[in-house]
Image (cartoon, rainbow, N blue to C red; front, side, top):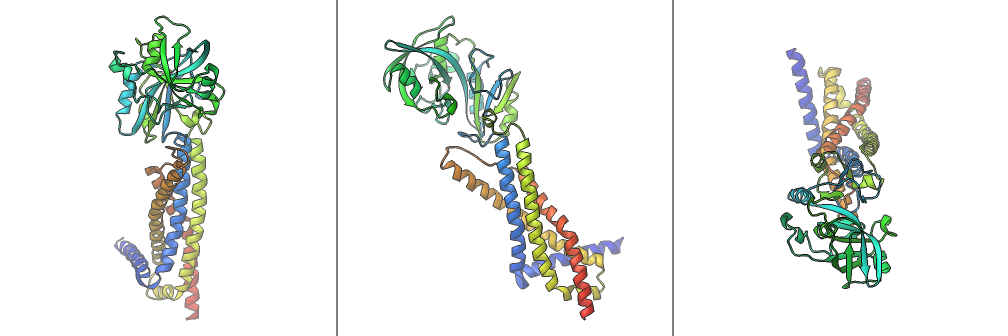
Length: 411
């Protein structure tokens, strides 16, 4: 047992020493090329897997890094983000404020949707009015809430005694129907419901709805508390859904515990882009196979050339009493170190590639993430490098034995 351990330790030490010697003196380029080959393969896998996770978790949804909607479970996640007259969430201002205090949440806003009557002059039209807690990055009904005063001043910690802004953002379709423009007054009134009030709103912005589904639908955007006051819904503080933009998909687990009988839907799920982990698994699996093949071919080629050049070294080791198993340990240690170095380098390259991809897309679509780097992806990258050793190991062992025999015959 002691002899076997000593032989194993000696083989490992010799393998490490040979890699260091070649890297520092005799063959630095060949070792570097081998490491680079594995690194490129692992880096490719990390990037592809990151994109798969980004798509499947909704991180590639346009408009936020990780955008989620909390909706009553009876609502279909495949429908438009509009619910009028259906189940609602309660105490939404408090829940949204609590979420907004988290470091990993960029903003959280309740969204209420009401079919209201808007009147300008002698024209009255029914319009979908969205009530939100305003944030520059938030869109509802395809309209940006940036023109609204940030937050929801009239709510005033549940007293509904704060100042009313009377601000309203309308779509171009709504402006055309009412014949109104920026700076003009519009009357807002809920067509039904006890305790309703007529609110005199000022149009602060007219814009084209960014969501195709709302191109032909007249919509408007106001502060949530002011919409609740107009509809007589200040007592329950309800909304149809809660939108959360987060820095990490890990937030989703906590969102699922906020309300009973609700569903957390990634924005991409609502738009038909991947509804579960199957997409990530498919994309990541394809990247894993391709990276494994590319890395194995590269290592097999470079290591094979190196073994052929060192055939006399293997014959010398054999003559010195190194058994076939000891020489196999040396070869596997050399290949394993190269693959490990390539795997670690590849993880770094993949992370850089993910950052570059996200930055490139963000130049054209604000606050959009197409790929996600996670510890699980990094661990899978190391599995790729280990797989390279497993696949190429039998080949390099066979080649070492063959070249050793050739060198012995030529000697």
